[in-house]
Amino acid sequence: MRDMVAIIGSGMMGSGIGAMAALAGNKTVLMDVDQKRAENGLARAIECIALRTENGLNTAEEAERARALLSISTNMEAAVADARLVIEAVVEDLAVKQELFARLDALLPPEVPICSNTSGLRITEISAKCCHAERTVTTHFWLPAHLVPLVEVVMGDQTSIVLAQQIVCE
Image 1 (cartoon, one colour):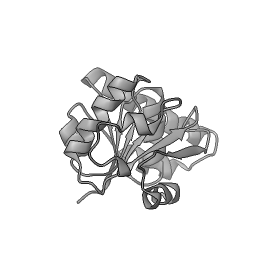
Image 2 (tube, one colour):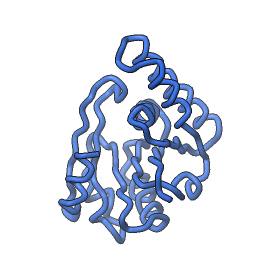
Image 3 (cartoon, rainbow, N blue to C red):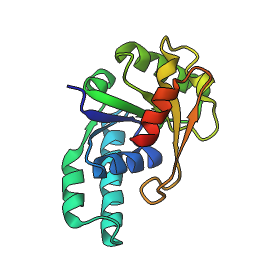
Image 4 (cartoon, rainbow, N blue to C red):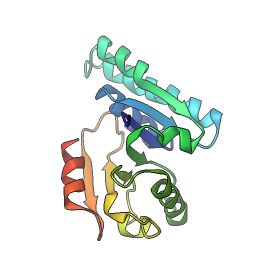
């Protein structure tokens, strides 16, 4: 059953996005290239949740539930195995993003959206090596993701309008 949100990259943006996904009630996995980075990302996500709680932006109960929904992985296949949504938050390098999107495109069923948190690259170029570019879209979270309630959704040349509307309503 596809019931998880997978965040690929657990740095500053990925950890904040992961915190917000968990606070929204989603099982959320933070995937990174090695265990230390993934653990650091989880610690940052928990800090993001704590900061929100300290400032009255969510309750202690919501924070506890969100922390329980967070997990980490260093294995891409395992991280996306149950994903219903994947959000990429890796380095702003077109070649890196293209390789990652091509890999995700091959791993995931065509109905699973693949989103990029890019702030400056075009999703059309990022998804150029995908067989199912219609399921790719930019979901640019503003910094810091756990405090600024704004996500810019940008379609690519091949993005499905139905997908873009679905993402906006998520």
